[in-house]
Length: 229
Image 1 (cartoon, one colour):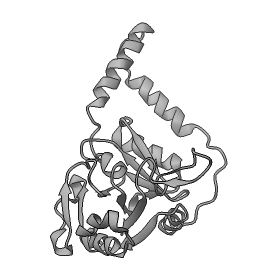
Image 2 (image 1 turned 180 degrees about the vertical axis):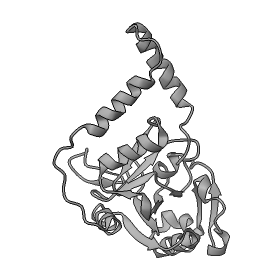
Image 3 (image 1 turned 180 degrees about the horizontal axis):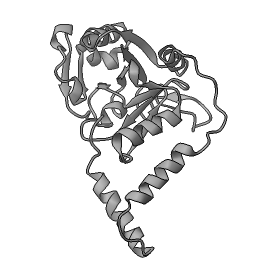
Protein backbone atom coordinates (compact mmCIF):
# COMPACT_ATOMS: atom_id res chain seq x y z
CA UNK A 1 0.00 0.00 0.00
CA UNK A 2 2.91 2.36 -0.60
CA UNK A 3 6.53 2.73 0.37
CA UNK A 4 7.74 4.12 3.65
CA UNK A 5 8.77 7.74 3.21
CA UNK A 6 12.27 9.14 3.71
CA UNK A 7 11.54 9.91 7.34
CA UNK A 8 12.33 6.27 8.00
CA UNK A 9 15.99 7.09 7.44
CA UNK A 10 15.86 9.81 10.09
CA UNK A 11 14.19 7.42 12.52
CA UNK A 12 16.89 4.80 11.91
CA UNK A 13 19.60 7.40 12.52
CA UNK A 14 18.09 8.27 15.90
CA UNK A 15 17.71 4.61 16.86
CA UNK A 16 21.28 3.90 15.78
CA UNK A 17 22.50 6.53 18.26
CA UNK A 18 20.39 4.94 21.01
CA UNK A 19 21.80 1.50 20.23
CA UNK A 20 25.35 2.86 20.25
CA UNK A 21 24.78 4.50 23.63
CA UNK A 22 23.50 1.17 24.98
CA UNK A 23 26.42 -0.73 23.50
CA UNK A 24 24.18 -2.74 21.20
CA UNK A 25 25.91 -3.87 18.02
CA UNK A 26 25.58 -6.52 15.34
CA UNK A 27 22.73 -7.89 13.27
CA UNK A 28 19.27 -7.00 14.63
CA UNK A 29 17.36 -9.55 12.53
CA UNK A 30 16.97 -12.06 15.34
CA UNK A 31 15.91 -9.41 17.84
CA UNK A 32 13.33 -8.01 15.41
CA UNK A 33 11.96 -11.50 14.76
CA UNK A 34 11.71 -12.15 18.50
CA UNK A 35 9.83 -8.88 19.00
CA UNK A 36 7.37 -9.74 16.23
CA UNK A 37 6.85 -13.22 17.69
CA UNK A 38 6.15 -11.72 21.11
CA UNK A 39 3.55 -9.36 19.65
CA UNK A 40 1.90 -12.16 17.68
CA UNK A 41 1.73 -14.44 20.72
CA UNK A 42 0.64 -11.76 23.20
CA UNK A 43 -2.84 -12.40 24.53
CA UNK A 44 -5.45 -9.80 23.63
CA UNK A 45 -7.85 -8.33 26.11
CA UNK A 46 -11.64 -8.72 25.91
CA UNK A 47 -13.06 -7.63 22.59
CA UNK A 48 -16.63 -7.24 21.32
CA UNK A 49 -17.94 -9.96 19.05
CA UNK A 50 -17.85 -8.99 15.37
CA UNK A 51 -20.44 -10.07 12.80
CA UNK A 52 -19.38 -12.07 9.79
CA UNK A 53 -20.23 -9.16 7.49
CA UNK A 54 -17.54 -6.64 8.39
CA UNK A 55 -18.51 -4.29 5.56
CA UNK A 56 -22.03 -3.82 6.86
CA UNK A 57 -20.74 -3.30 10.39
CA UNK A 58 -18.26 -0.68 9.14
CA UNK A 59 -20.92 1.20 7.17
CA UNK A 60 -23.23 1.30 10.18
CA UNK A 61 -20.55 2.44 12.62
CA UNK A 62 -19.19 5.05 10.19
CA UNK A 63 -22.70 6.48 9.96
CA UNK A 64 -22.88 6.52 13.76
CA UNK A 65 -19.72 8.67 13.69
CA UNK A 66 -21.50 11.17 11.38
CA UNK A 67 -19.74 10.16 8.19
CA UNK A 68 -21.91 9.65 5.14
CA UNK A 69 -21.43 6.44 3.19
CA UNK A 70 -22.04 4.86 -0.19
CA UNK A 71 -21.10 1.50 -1.65
CA UNK A 72 -20.23 0.99 -5.32
CA UNK A 73 -19.28 -2.12 -7.27
CA UNK A 74 -16.17 -0.95 -9.11
CA UNK A 75 -13.64 1.85 -8.91
CA UNK A 76 -14.70 3.07 -12.36
CA UNK A 77 -17.99 4.20 -10.78
CA UNK A 78 -16.20 6.50 -8.35
CA UNK A 79 -16.27 9.78 -10.36
CA UNK A 80 -20.05 9.61 -10.76
CA UNK A 81 -20.46 8.71 -7.09
CA UNK A 82 -18.39 11.72 -6.01
CA UNK A 83 -20.35 14.00 -8.38
CA UNK A 84 -23.65 12.77 -6.91
CA UNK A 85 -22.41 13.45 -3.41
CA UNK A 86 -21.18 16.97 -4.24
CA UNK A 87 -24.45 17.81 -6.02
CA UNK A 88 -26.46 16.71 -2.97
CA UNK A 89 -24.59 18.91 -0.52
CA UNK A 90 -26.60 21.76 0.96
CA UNK A 91 -23.94 24.46 0.83
CA UNK A 92 -24.28 28.11 1.72
CA UNK A 93 -23.01 30.91 -0.52
CA UNK A 94 -19.55 30.93 1.07
CA UNK A 95 -19.02 27.37 -0.14
CA UNK A 96 -20.52 27.88 -3.58
CA UNK A 97 -17.15 27.40 -5.27
CA UNK A 98 -17.23 23.76 -4.22
CA UNK A 99 -20.16 23.33 -6.60
CA UNK A 100 -17.67 23.97 -9.42
CA UNK A 101 -16.51 20.39 -8.80
CA UNK A 102 -12.83 21.19 -8.30
CA UNK A 103 -10.65 19.15 -6.00
CA UNK A 104 -7.53 17.07 -5.50
CA UNK A 105 -6.93 13.33 -5.26
CA UNK A 106 -4.20 10.85 -4.41
CA UNK A 107 -2.06 9.65 -7.35
CA UNK A 108 -3.73 6.23 -7.39
CA UNK A 109 -6.97 7.85 -8.59
CA UNK A 110 -5.43 10.14 -11.20
CA UNK A 111 -6.38 7.97 -14.19
CA UNK A 112 -10.09 7.77 -13.39
CA UNK A 113 -12.40 9.55 -15.84
CA UNK A 114 -13.19 12.56 -13.69
CA UNK A 115 -14.16 14.90 -16.59
CA UNK A 116 -16.99 12.61 -17.71
CA UNK A 117 -18.59 13.23 -14.32
CA UNK A 118 -18.05 16.98 -14.61
CA UNK A 119 -15.22 16.98 -12.07
CA UNK A 120 -11.92 18.87 -12.32
CA UNK A 121 -9.71 16.77 -10.06
CA UNK A 122 -5.94 17.29 -9.82
CA UNK A 123 -3.61 14.53 -8.61
CA UNK A 124 -1.57 16.47 -6.05
CA UNK A 125 -1.50 17.15 -2.29
CA UNK A 126 -4.11 19.61 -1.04
CA UNK A 127 -3.22 23.21 -0.40
CA UNK A 128 -4.97 25.75 1.81
CA UNK A 129 -7.49 26.84 -0.82
CA UNK A 130 -8.67 23.37 -1.88
CA UNK A 131 -12.21 22.56 -0.74
CA UNK A 132 -12.42 18.88 -1.78
CA UNK A 133 -9.88 16.14 -1.06
CA UNK A 134 -10.24 12.58 -2.38
CA UNK A 135 -8.07 9.95 -0.72
CA UNK A 136 -7.79 6.24 -0.27
CA UNK A 137 -7.23 4.46 3.04
CA UNK A 138 -4.71 1.89 4.15
CA UNK A 139 -7.58 -0.05 5.73
CA UNK A 140 -10.71 0.56 7.78
CA UNK A 141 -11.92 -0.72 11.15
CA UNK A 142 -15.37 -2.28 11.36
CA UNK A 143 -15.59 -2.10 15.15
CA UNK A 144 -15.50 1.70 15.26
CA UNK A 145 -16.22 2.88 11.69
CA UNK A 146 -12.71 4.29 11.51
CA UNK A 147 -10.47 5.02 8.51
CA UNK A 148 -6.77 4.19 8.86
CA UNK A 149 -4.61 6.46 6.70
CA UNK A 150 -0.81 6.16 6.66
CA UNK A 151 1.50 8.93 5.55
CA UNK A 152 3.79 8.69 2.53
CA UNK A 153 4.74 10.31 -0.75
CA UNK A 154 1.85 8.62 -2.58
CA UNK A 155 -0.61 9.12 0.31
CA UNK A 156 -0.38 12.81 1.29
CA UNK A 157 -2.31 13.36 4.49
CA UNK A 158 -2.85 17.06 3.67
CA UNK A 159 -5.55 15.92 1.25
CA UNK A 160 -7.65 14.59 4.10
CA UNK A 161 -6.83 17.30 6.65
CA UNK A 162 -7.01 20.62 4.78
CA UNK A 163 -10.18 20.56 2.60
CA UNK A 164 -13.65 21.22 3.99
CA UNK A 165 -14.85 17.96 2.42
CA UNK A 166 -12.96 14.68 2.61
CA UNK A 167 -14.05 11.81 0.36
CA UNK A 168 -12.33 8.54 1.34
CA UNK A 169 -12.28 5.41 -0.79
CA UNK A 170 -12.12 2.07 1.04
CA UNK A 171 -11.88 -1.28 -0.72
CA UNK A 172 -14.19 -3.78 0.94
CA UNK A 173 -11.45 -6.38 1.35
CA UNK A 174 -9.42 -3.86 3.38
CA UNK A 175 -12.01 -3.64 6.15
CA UNK A 176 -10.71 -5.43 9.25
CA UNK A 177 -12.41 -6.26 12.52
CA UNK A 178 -10.50 -4.09 14.97
CA UNK A 179 -7.46 -1.95 15.70
CA UNK A 180 -5.41 -5.05 16.49
CA UNK A 181 -5.87 -6.34 12.94
CA UNK A 182 -5.13 -2.89 11.51
CA UNK A 183 -1.75 -2.69 13.26
CA UNK A 184 -0.95 -6.29 12.30
CA UNK A 185 -1.64 -5.37 8.66
CA UNK A 186 0.65 -2.35 8.91
CA UNK A 187 3.47 -4.48 10.30
CA UNK A 188 2.94 -7.20 7.70
CA UNK A 189 2.70 -4.96 4.63
CA UNK A 190 4.87 -1.96 5.45
CA UNK A 191 7.55 -3.66 7.50
CA UNK A 192 8.06 -0.55 9.62
CA UNK A 193 5.78 2.09 11.02
CA UNK A 194 5.29 5.08 8.71
CA UNK A 195 5.89 8.58 9.99
CA UNK A 196 2.21 8.95 10.87
CA UNK A 197 -0.81 6.67 11.20
CA UNK A 198 -4.06 8.65 11.19
CA UNK A 199 -7.31 7.28 12.60
CA UNK A 200 -10.32 9.14 11.21
CA UNK A 201 -13.71 8.58 12.82
CA UNK A 202 -16.08 11.05 11.19
CA UNK A 203 -15.71 14.80 10.68
CA UNK A 204 -13.30 16.83 12.79
CA UNK A 205 -14.81 18.18 15.98
CA UNK A 206 -13.82 19.60 19.35
CA UNK A 207 -15.55 20.56 22.57
CA UNK A 208 -12.59 22.38 24.12
CA UNK A 209 -14.31 25.77 24.42
CA UNK A 210 -17.13 25.79 26.98
CA UNK A 211 -17.91 22.16 26.06
CA UNK A 212 -19.58 23.36 22.87
CA UNK A 213 -19.08 20.99 19.94
CA UNK A 214 -17.47 22.71 16.96
CA UNK A 215 -17.22 20.77 13.68
CA UNK A 216 -14.29 21.36 11.38
CA UNK A 217 -11.97 22.78 14.03
CA UNK A 218 -8.98 20.58 13.19
CA UNK A 219 -9.95 19.13 9.83
CA UNK A 220 -12.88 18.54 7.45
CA UNK A 221 -16.44 19.64 8.12
CA UNK A 222 -17.71 16.49 6.44
CA UNK A 223 -16.40 13.00 5.65
CA UNK A 224 -17.94 10.88 2.92
CA UNK A 225 -16.82 7.25 2.60
CA UNK A 226 -17.16 5.26 -0.60
CA UNK A 227 -16.71 1.51 -0.18
CA UNK A 228 -15.69 -0.26 -3.38
CA UNK A 229 -16.61 -3.91 -3.81
